[in-house]
Length: 227
Image 1 (cartoon, rainbow, N blue to C red):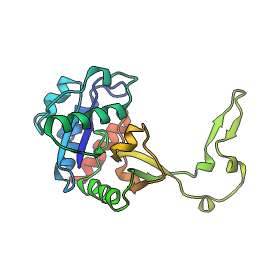
Image 2 (cartoon, rainbow, N blue to C red; image 1 turned 180 degrees about the vertical axis):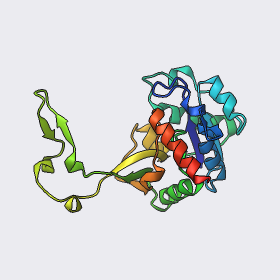
Image 3 (spheres, rainbow, N blue to C red; image 1 turned 30 degrees about the vertical axis):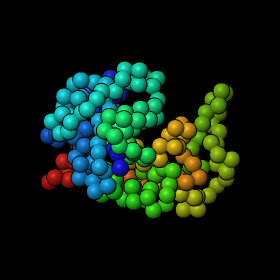
């Protein structure tokens, strides 16, 4: 299984977050090390356009090529990077990867065991995709949107009925930690199909760092894990 760790430069929410020091090592190192410990992954590619990120990552892993600038713009779609990277690897190394696992560097609490379990599901189910999720903290029926008149409206039709939380169906949110794809579904520019399955993770491992508050919480959690 080929693993791609996408790490574009120019973060707006938290500048330099991918290589920001998280309790003694750069944030991206947590993901690199988890991938290196995986029993299922046979090759790891860091996809970055940023030389500073590349230099930091080279302390952990070789980087055979950089991401083209046209795939690293603010409006670039990450699916195009995945497709480009798999095709580049297959051409450069004579491999024939037809599936890929994407590991976002902003999710430092995902482990090698999580990666391997998600890939196991992918293989056992002959899935088009397996994506990591966690249980949503509130029922979907509680969510509201605000219309053009400033009035609260239900997001789903059943949202106006009164019910206890325990009566509502559980819903789940993607946590960004693990995406396993067949290349066919990516080439159709989709993540989901009738053969998409979840890999469920606990909320406490589902940190996806986007801003300073997220980073500080990840610092606290990883520090506690080493006490």
